[in-house]
Image (cartoon, rainbow, N blue to C red):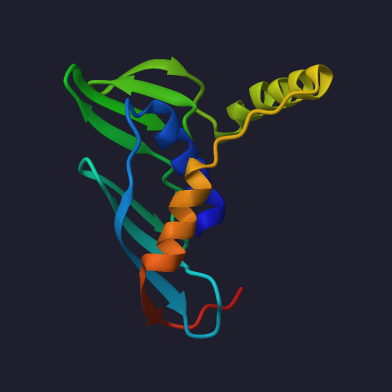
Length: 141
């Protein structure tokens, strides 16, 4: 669940005006697996995240935030920006991120530089270290 979840955490750490810290986590592990299939995360500053691999139907890759200027939503994995419920920018596809990502990677390789934000990995490590572990139904592919 943290494979796609860390993408959301990467966006979260980029858009928030100040860092957040995990204060509580509940992780659901299938009885026959060693990694969580669902995670409910609670951070400082009233920030929460809910990841669930078992979701059926269209996948939800949304981040919603109430700001002092109104409601902000990032949909389709950060590809669509909505402000107060109205589309503002972006493409309605999950694939829109890749051209910019690969262009950035090419620039980093060309300039022999790196661009690393470890905060999302710290959030995942904190969840796995501090989270309450719950066993749920077995999961088979």
